[in-house]
Image 1 (cartoon, rainbow, N blue to C red):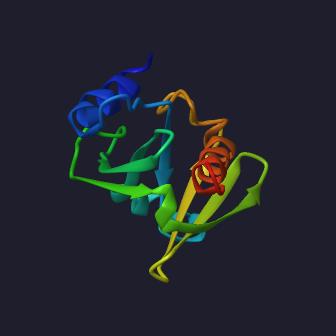
Image 2: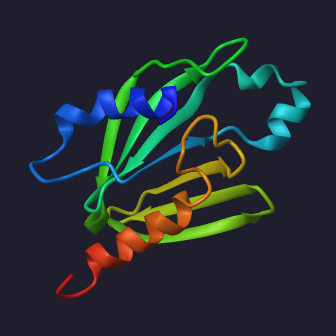
Length: 144
């Protein structure tokens, strides 16, 4: 388990329901590639980064930040979304640069980016989107 995975597990352990387990971790961000290029990488520093974890019932999102040299193990805020609150998940992207749009039942849409090669930040990075979609489908299926 990576140091970042251990951090995610420690931060979320108290939030899990009895019998609920963290199944997979991921690393998400909201920074647009065009802005990063336009600012010569300076926009990479700061907010817009998230550790994520999937259970069979919900997704957890831990807001963190990027320092000058590396990602910080800082919990700025924890959010969670039950799969029943997600109306649809729209994946997109190409090669290792992926995006997911989570359309919520309240009308909001959350867009996250993911680099599938960033496995040094979360061990489940390569299978994160597929697992999220599978867990969502299983949790929202009638009789599921």
